[in-house]
Amino acid sequence: MAESATDREAGGNCNKEFIGIGGTVITVISKTKYEASDEEIKKLFSFHKLGNVVDIAALGCGEFNAAYKVTCDNGANYALKISPPEGSKVLTYEKNMMKSEVFWYSQMHEKTDILCPKVYVSDFSKEIIKSNCFIMELMPGGLIWEMGISAEEYEAIQKQKICMLTKIHKITNDGYGYIQTGLNASWYEALKNMALRLIDDCKSLGHDTPDGERFLQMIEKHKKLLETVPCRMVNFDLWDSNILYNKETGKICWIDPERGFWGDPVADFITLGPGQKAPLSAKQKELDIYNEMAEEKIFLTKETEIRYALAVCYLALIEEVEKYVRYEPDNPTYIRNTVDAREMYDMAFGIL
Image (cartoon, rainbow, N blue to C red):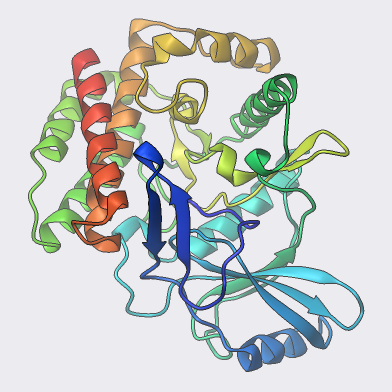
């Protein structure tokens, strides 16, 4: 869902090619990326006194934000990230999400020792770049599938990811939900409102979501349990595509935390082990590694299975609704989202 800052694009709207089922080459064309001119970027860097720009190269083949590698005459390299243009069709929770990303980077820098980029400038004035943007440290490393890693290296990377989650889960708050849409007094209220916003988005796009409505019923069914959930920093997007691996040091760097929220830490297990289509019970290995490092343990119980299944339903609802915004029905990614959401719903509803 979030984009990587290391994939390359040719410039402008990103035509992202990857290998799909059966070896088919799939092209994804972004509908939301801001196309910044060289002049805009040079003016932005000059205004913020970061140096004279001598080179600009597009970064990232994600489907939401635009990103550029910018080199200045002092030899410094930066990453510039720009949110979708004003008026772009985005989901409600994605509005002002860039401000959220800057906030989560600050939380990690201020309250943990997690390796992640430093944000040098955040510019939400829309005076030079006509959209929210920020300039951050360009980190070394690459995507793990580009690095020729061994099975042992991959296992070490996954342990580092789990260690990072134990660190953000120590960060607490009084309110639950997305900071960009407003916080709630409990995880029950927050999750319900998060679901309702997506259902409303779906209806505004001309579609019904019976699975989303059923998800709401499951939230009501488990209201008492959800009202007891602790409030923690949750990333909800720590896929391998959102880390950079430095093969020389063996360390990973966390990028693209914009989809984070305050909520149930169990939700972060979705991106671990067998992935989002598997129940929490299939992730005992990841739970054991987590509990070796975490002060606050997460054990496999009936209650944590339910909490996890509800988080999976929420991700399924996101995938179901976002396809209507981003893709045409014959697009392979539209079909992928449809299949993924169906499998996630079926697994989670079976538990709930």
